[in-house]
Figure (cartoon, rainbow, N blue to C red):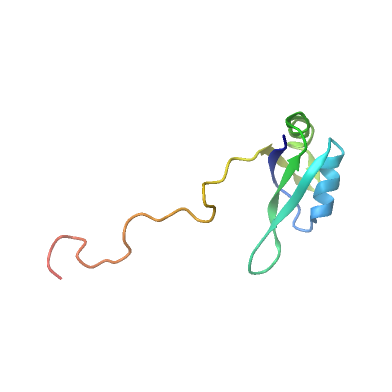
Length: 105
């Protein structure tokens, strides 16, 4: 079963292929994606790598976390599960300001 890893501290010029190649030095990579800004298309400096096995994921964390990569220090850890439904979490509370104090307008 594949294990997804969060990779922070990526140089902004890193491509998906470069990310894949870096982790392929450690073990079999199922996928590698650099996260980009939706509006500009520029890298946000982090990404996700899916290693083919949990053992390969553990080895990648041990060997690559804290390693210098093109002048930046990598942060590699197991990815946290995303909330169901994805996207932004629902907001609580209202937005208007009228009637909040309980008094008259």
